[in-house]
Length: 228
Ligand code: ADP
Ligand code: ADP
Image (tube, rainbow, N blue to C red; front, side, top):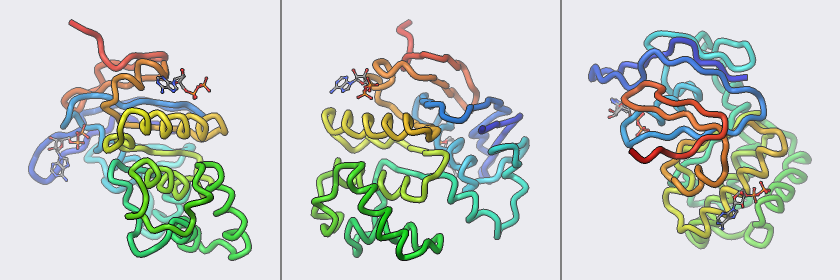
């Protein structure tokens, strides 16, 4: 379970990006974070990943307050959360296979386990035939699949996605959303920030809307926005 309790984040320039927000996300939920640019979505995701530390408040993952983690404990948190970004962030000098294997090497997985898991996740995202390609040889959709494979290879309990379809065309977008939905159905909690109105409206998942650092809407089967 993820729990934000009275969380605020004020950056060094005194911008208050997140203002006293509280919410909980149960294991296995699929949550869309929506809101205009600058609303505070990325900040919330960074707080969850402990890339930022809140100015006030507490953030719990499975009852553990991650704001209290020591520096050397942070890598253990990162193992429990897979992340995908709008710009893929694959290592350009490694093949698809090596990019994914590297994520396992970092957490000191057994070579035997790596040889087993990497082909498994490549197959799950439909990239088995691209294992030996380099990222720049792939389409945007294929790069995002590779990045999804990398995000889930260590079997995280949470998948964080920050605008994962922002650079993709509509058809490719749906392929990626279906994959994320598939990963969610296998039990992974998904928290996805997005501007993709069509997706949010069709998926009918929980929607948390952020505006100027505040939660202004939290609906179980929500839409992207309401016309005024
Ligand atoms: P969103 O993801 O919804 O577009 P962000 O969380 O990126 O929103 O940004 C929220 C606010 O915080 C914005 O006003 C943004 O300019 C500001 N902000 C984001 N990151 C930083 C930072 N590292 N330093 C200072 N201000 C920041
Ligand atoms: P399901 O939840 O039934 O397994 P998926 O996870 O494949 O379905 O897709 C999630 C939702 O997205 C479904 O409601 C499906 O109808 C919709 N959807 C899938 N592909 C497209 C598409 N290309 N255009 C519009 N909606 C789509």
